[in-house]
Amino acid sequence: MDAETIRAVAKIARSRAERGGGSAAQGDGMSRLGASRALHQLATDLEVTAAEFERTTRKRARAPRA
Image 1 (cartoon, one colour):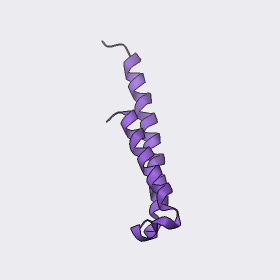
Image 2: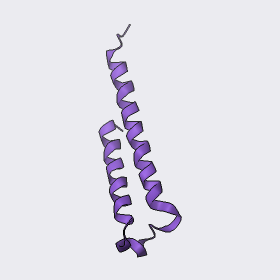
Image 3: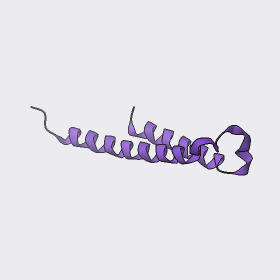
Image 4: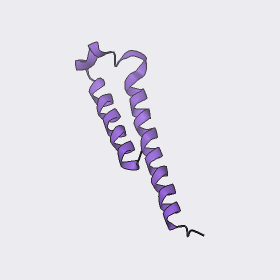
């Protein structure tokens, strides 16, 4: 998986968390067990993972091969 794909998944998780925070989503279970908060945390974790993935990929690309 590449960084762009990871960020796309994070965006989907954030949009779902935002949609679940309102009163329109009362019947879909998003209020149970802090699902919205968990989705926000997942999105943050995915963003950090994508940034780390890019950092290590760039570092490897610059290193000379022996």
